[in-house]
Length: 203
Image 1 (cartoon, helix red, strand yellow):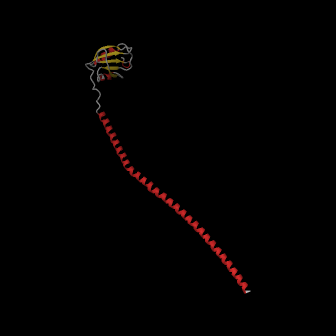
Image 2 (tube, helix red, strand yellow):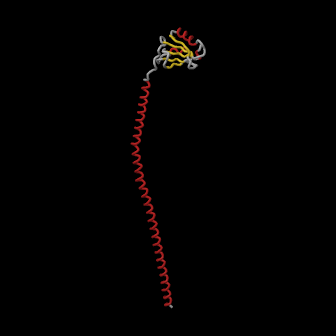
Image 3 (spheres, helix red, strand yellow):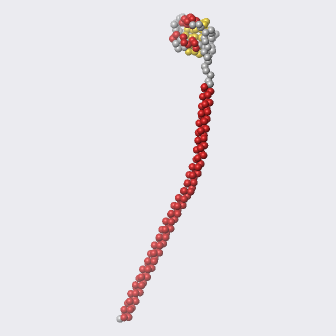
């Protein structure tokens, strides 16, 4: 009986030992698998972190260097642009001064020449008879010398026209007429001043 109990005890003990051993082996395998997975995950995380850091470092080094270089190069360029603007401003002021100075020295118009003592011809361009003779009498009474009178057959003028042989002449005759104009031209009759009476000044 004791022998049977001992045999049963040995079998139970051996069975328990084998089960415990199998549990230990299984736990060891699980720990190994878990450890390998953890190591792989840790390696992947470290690799990603290294790549991100490397990219950030390259951006800071190369990108920042270019920005600094560009900003330092912009300083002389802006200075040159400023100097060019100042030069252009000075040039424009000088050119404006050059253009205004000669303008201020422009010669004045010819000085008026008195019509007194110069030969004058009066022509009548209107259909009214005796206009030229009337003006001859009036102007001679004012001290002028009307040596010739006649009719102007080319056209009928509205305003009186004064043709002079020399610039500056005839200005003192304008006030005797309403809207007379003076122009320098050639006078075929040989006088120095020719007055063509228009309808506005027909007497």
